Image (cartoon, rainbow, N blue to C red):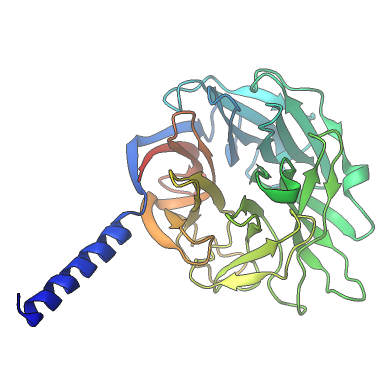
Length: 379
């Protein structure tokens, strides 16, 4: 074989190897069309918002939780927490079930976490946008305990009046020193002190005793006044045990906010900006998905528009799925979940390994209804 031909064959083999490596990324196949779970103007509710989702420890049930707002779409409207449950991996769903209401008060910002060691499902929410409450279920969402007001232990002198959990989903840590810890993402108005400027900042509420007690950790730090703030957030665990928090960034719309924790969510870095991800001034969702190798990829769902400012909601459209195979260092756009108006989302892995995305969308507004879309993931 002549030298030129040999080198050509080697080059072709390298190209094929690289192409094969690139093609090895997990593939997402949509299963059917989006299924509408809640629609505005039904069952006495003006609108449904804020999707929240979790699968039970045995994988037999998945809960889709949301706000039902009465009378208006305002954040201060009379609001209840509702749930629908699937026992067949998201194919069919039960009728809506009321989890909690408090007369004419606002009961919102649901954030759920599964304790995989005990099977308990913890649900945090806020009353009147400043009190922090929690309830739990020990029968896969069939019934819920009497909610407890945890405000006295989760608020301190730095917290201003506004305080919110999630919204969406918390996590339980699976690695290292903090294995088993339950985490609920949160954010609040924070008063300035001698070291840091005040403003909206994100943090985690955590428990190391399966929910018997809860502690509010330290907030994300800001390097300078007017820099990126902390807002609606969600947390994921990386392959090396660090935590990554994706954060709605109202102050600088040229990229998504994020922070890192190396102590199990007790404290967080300054808020960084990832300019490779769009900032629609909107909540987004993130979830780790296990590969056959034992490592995790990160799945990220967000509207793909870029807001022009804090109050610009035109960017809430074209809900898109990204993946990261390197612990959120880089991202690859994978699938269009929903074209057109679309906004908040949450995700869960069904018992059969399929991915469920629970999200706000609609033909005219981004929150006309709440939908479920299922994906089969193959390696």
